[in-house]
Image (cartoon, rainbow, N blue to C red; front, side, top):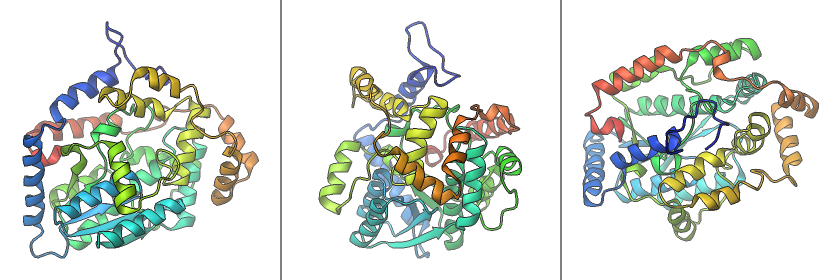
Length: 364
């Protein structure tokens, strides 16, 4: 990590706050053999028990990526009755689509696609792009959360299984990607850079989260956090056993996400997402710092194909290449430059964590 995170801090040993926080949390949550296995199995049994009388035990979000695919495999192996749900925002890569079809067929699990209104979603994405903020992918993040909870509530399901995991995603500066649940911030961006009127887009703020959590009793379960999850081994397993195909880079299961993270954030904000990924891998011993620094000498995108990618993105967003270049040249802004609910949300979530810190499933 470096000062591309404006809020980074270093201790007297030269270690940054991100690595210190990661290592402290990892000591608390890392895989601990039989103890973790027992907790994993007890959680599975709890999900099954609460699913009695319902068609499904859980909802599982699938993207065609590594983590969600492996989470689906684990859940099926444990005998859970799964409804796989994919948020279709119009940006799926061909490999991701094929991976999803392959996994639901081979594992014999039911599948639902939550399709966003493309015209509406395109306007929302355009607003966030024009706001010149790093949170360009907030519309997708908030839609995923909203869609998964809507589907879970519709089917009376109490658990949403996520492929999110601490081992590979433990480090991500807040300044690089501010809270997607801040609707004050979200609505301000829409009002000032797009169209605030929404018809079907599934927003998901803290009030909606509290409703689904406390009234509907829905919990998010991170299965990969309680198994010995090693991404490289998972990739090889998925390729050999489930016919899974790689899509070209981290988060490139979505063509838009891959383009934004590898090119736009790097060129406009000096944010290289590989720094966070490599830092996590260094902290868990899967990579050396020297290897990471060597990798970072290369660009995070392919200069030979980036213009072709840009043309595709512009065509889908219905903007010209010139308009895109003008947006890219705009002065970078951060969430602190716009109205937001950071302080109130921090108080709400800090209070929640203090009250429920002993509830195992809440942090699982």
